[in-house]
Length: 323
View 1 (cartoon, rainbow, N blue to C red):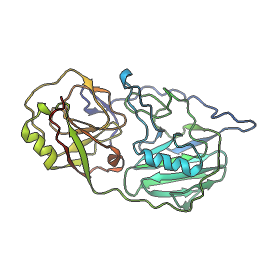
View 2 (cartoon, helix red, strand yellow; view 1 turned 135 degrees about the horizontal axis):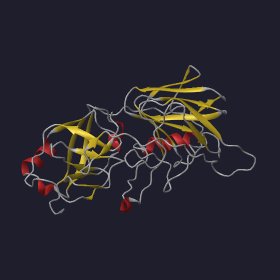
View 3 (cartoon, one colour; view 1 turned 135 degrees about the vertical axis):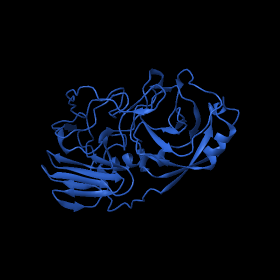
């Protein structure tokens, strides 16, 4: 899946990242006589980022929420290793990652199922895993779904920005996506791991049925476009990322040409660029855009684990009072 930024209207495009700066180190929560540890990134994978529950409440300053695309998986991974649910963990994208713990610790993997090995030995995911000091933790590619969450007891303790440690791939807030050779600080362990043996995983469906509410610019589209949106299938395209899920299918014709002055857009907004192909905004979405939004999803969570090629169908409330 692609990484990149958006233009004024939200269309995804590739841009170079700014020069990388040294990561600030953070000692983690205060604790008498306890030393925070660190993890070394041996293999960063295609797109591995630090994520927590995001930074809601800053949209008026142009800052999106960001945070884990699958917050339930993040919360679960943190509970399994004894962290508070909002603690920062790693979100991988399809290709996994490999880490080395400088001190003994506990990890857990949730979300997209993948093979987890500790110093070459396969171990179960979905539960706490004890890791000796210096051991290599290797998380393989996702067998289904897209995003796995790897939590470390103590949490990833990079410096928070606006109250969150989350990587925002659009604005650049928070730590940059991981690269080979990075070192990440780990906070202090507060409690022991959860008492659980195994948690089953459910593979994501091959077809998603998503509920929407029309508006605020559905009147920019023809009646036929509304029928197409709610009556035909789309597929998730390969250029999707944390900013948005690009859909491929029937174009949505408009009655109002051109662009509108930039206005606020929300999580789950279905924006329609000039090519007529819908784009669903996800956690790192821009807070304003100049292309019309035909509808807004009630819930974006099903898209967190939806791979390219997944079929998407829309249904929902046709509320023509929305302006």
